[in-house]
Length: 176
Image 1 (cartoon, rainbow, N blue to C red):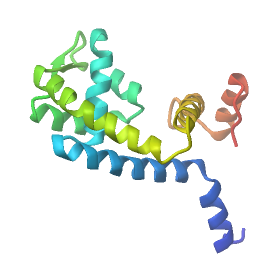
Image 2 (image 1 turned 45 degrees about the vertical axis):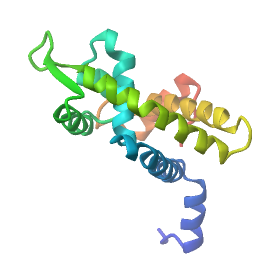
Image 3 (image 1 turned 30 degrees about the horizontal axis):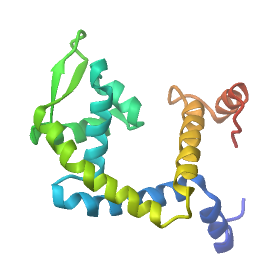
């Protein structure tokens, strides 16, 4: 097997969904973080608080919240620990001793309220860098891509690419 050339690597970079999505995500996150700086939040923290406020009526567990924002449970747990130290949420025991329910505190609701104008301003700024209505189209595409990737995601570490392809065929998606 030949080593990839610089041209091969450039072509992969220009066409790779993972590379381009992660690159865009880092750039957009940096913009949002700059807007949130004045209110003492990070974009990731605001996202967790907003998801928690949305899911609050369902008494979300750490697992539920991780699924909702498509984040590994261990990464979410680290983020939740920071938010809990700030007093913005509480982790309470669930019905099962291993389960923890995540609750937004009044201070967390205030942090979310403080962050909302910053979020709106950052969202508007990003939208203004694009053509009219392009942000809406991009967001629809990203939601579809997320759904497709979730359908292709192995349910356990032993799942192979061929299993992912079979899942893709069943759901009408394409897997490479």
